[in-house]
Image 1 (cartoon, rainbow, N blue to C red):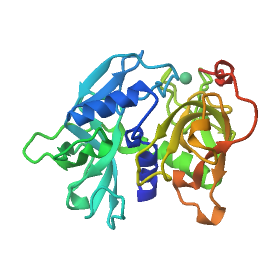
Image 2 (tube, helix red, strand yellow; image 1 turned 90 degrees about the vertical axis):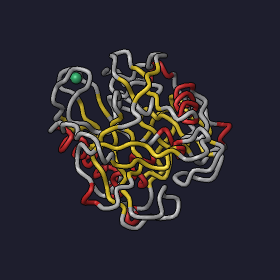
Image 3 (cartoon, rainbow, N blue to C red; image 1 turned 90 degrees about the horizontal axis):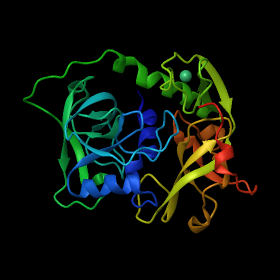
Length: 305
Ligand SMILES: [Zn+2]
C-alpha cells in the first residue's frame, strides 16, 4: 500500500473529529479520555471501531450497545512513512496501519512506532501508547507499539490481499474524477467505496458502477478544534450519500459557513485539478452545496439495500 493510499483512511477516520453533533463518536472520544477503547454494535452483531452512526454495510443505524475492545490489536495492512511531515503523529519514520483491535470487527487507522518496516507483518500484535494527558481526541493515543513478549496471533489469509485491492480500485476512479462503486448481483446494493464482497448477502461483487459526484448530507459534525488533516476551523465533516449509492461515505464539506450545513443538503464534489491528483482521497477537496432544494432523506436512499 502506498502512503497516499492509507492517508485516505486517515482523512476519513472519524476519530479525527474533535467535536460532533452525533452521540456515537462523542462516546468513543469520551472513553478515549479515560483510556478505554469502545466500539458500537450493529444490528447484525458486528462491532465497529471506530464507531459509526450507521452500519456501513447496510446503512442501518447502529444499536446503542457499546463494547469495550482492545486495547491490543492486530495489524492488517500498513504503509511505511519514511519522511514524516508536520502534522504527522510521530517525528520519526513510522507506519500508518490498519489495526483490528481485539473484539472489533473493523479496523481503525493509527500510527505504529515499529522502528523499521522490516518489523511489520500481517498479524503483528500491537498495543497503544497513551499520552500522559488525555483530552478526548484520537491523539490521546500517541501511537501503537509492537507487543514484544507475547504470542503471535494466527494470521487469517484473507487479510493479506482483500483490504487493499478494492480500495485501490476506488482510488483509481477518484484519481480520474469518478466515484466507482460496486453493485451486488444478488441484492443490488451499491457500495461506495468499491468493495469485492457483499457484506449483506455474502456474494462476490464483480459489477463496477460509476455513481454521481453529487449527493445528500445525511449526518454531519462541526469541528471546532484544529486538525492537521482538515481545513481551518470550524470545519464540517459529513456522511454524504452519493446519488446512486446505498451507503454513505465520509467527506469534508466546504464552500459554505459551517452553521449553514444541514441534513438533506445537496452537495457536489470539488475536485482538485487533474495534474495535482494522486492515488488518494485528497483529489476531492471537499463537497460544496449545489444550491438545489434539500432532499428528503427517506427518499434519497438509493433503494437497493
Ligand atoms: Zn448482496
